[in-house]
Image 1 (cartoon, rainbow, N blue to C red):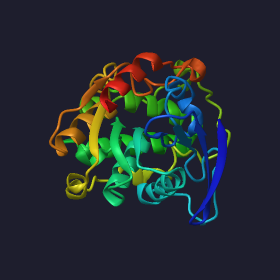
Image 2 (cartoon, rainbow, N blue to C red; image 1 turned 135 degrees about the vertical axis):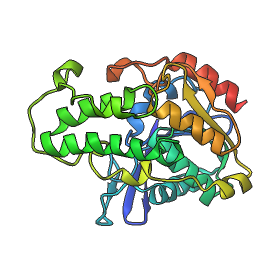
Image 3 (tube, rainbow, N blue to C red; image 1 turned 180 degrees about the vertical axis):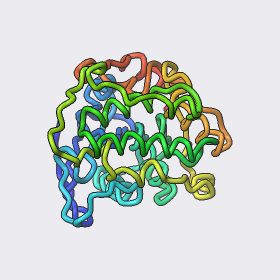
Amino acid sequence: METRTLDTDDAIITYDVSGSGGRPLMMIGQPMDASGFTALRAQFPDRTVITYDPRGLGRSTRSDGLTENTPQIQAGDVHAVIEAVGGPVDLFASSGGAVTALELVAAHPNDVVTLVAHEPPLINVLPDADAARKARDGFMDAYQAKGWGAGMAAFMQMSSYQGEYTDEYFALPLPDPAQFGMPAEDDGKRDDPLLGTASLAITDYHPRVDDLAASPTRIVIAVGEETGDAFTARTAVHTARLLGQEAVVFPSHHGGFIGGEYGYAGKPEEFAVKLREVFG
C-alpha cells in the first residue's frame, strides 16, 4: 500500500492506494478515516483501492481556520483525490461519508460510475425530522454537559432506538456510560467530531435531488439487515425513496464492513460479496 498526500484548498489530504486492476474503487467515511476500511480493503485484492482521511481527521490536516465537516468542502477534497488517481471510480461511502458522496455526485457528476451510499444519516428526509433533530441535539447536549462517556452513551441510545422518536423516547433517562463500557469521568475535551458541533452540516444536509437525477452516476442506497428500524436504517430507506428507489439490503449493521479491531465487528467478507454484486 502506498500512502500519498495532496494539497487542496487549505488542507493536506492523506490517502492510500493499494492493489491494481479494474476500475479504481474508493472507500470513504465520516468521521471515520481510512483505518476503518482495513478489513473491507482486504476483500478486494484484484482492484485498485483508494481510502483517505477527511480533512482535520486522522492524518489529514487543515489550515482553513474552520472546524466544520461540511459535505461541500469534503466533496471537493474527494474530487481532488479522484482526479489525482485518475478517475472515474466506483465509490463505497459509509455514514457521513455517504452524505459527502451524494454531494460529490451532484457537484462532480463524472467522478463516479457507481455509488453505494451506506446508511447516510440525513435527518431532513425523515417524516419525524424535527423529533430526530431534537434527539440528536440531546446526545450533543449530554456531551457538552458531562463529557465523552455521557455523550457517547446518549448517542448509542439515540442511534439504536427503533422507530420514530416519540414522547416515549424523550421520556427515557440518560443512560449510564458504564452500561456501554464507557468512562463516566469527564476528560474536559469537547472536540469529538461525532459528538460535538463539527458535523451538524452533515446530518442537516439535504440531497440535491435534481442534480443527482441528472448525473450519469448509478446511485444505490444501502441499508444493513441488522440495523432494523433504527435511525440510519430509516434515513437510508427515506433517502432511497426520495431518489425514487428502494434501499438495497446489505449484510450486518451500520458498521457491517468493519473487522473485529473496533470491538463491534461486522461481516466484512459477506459485505464484500454483496458489494461486488452491486458494483457488477
